[in-house]
Image 1: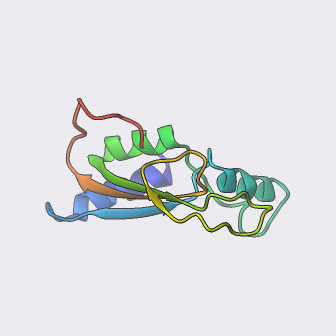
Image 2: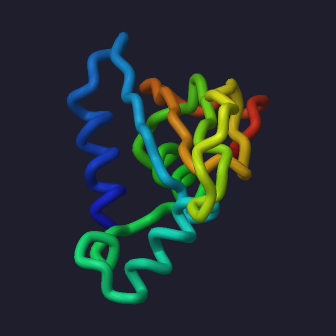
Length: 117
């Protein structure tokens, strides 16, 4: 088990039935996640120790911990080497976004719902 798996399982264990977990992430498969991974590969003091998850990795970890996605918002729609843009956050998981926020709730994932986060 990885540390992310252990953390999500512990969150699920202590989460009240009506509770929720809000995650804010720079995902590995997003432009900012790729940028910070590159900095880490160059030996950046912070990012060389960071672990970035892909969308499928996070979906698998959440599912295994007994958490289901309720809501997702995407933001940070400009590349790391550009000035900030005016485009604000929006609902849904947009792979072109640099930042993803999601609300996870306790419970099994609905088999009829999409499995991606």
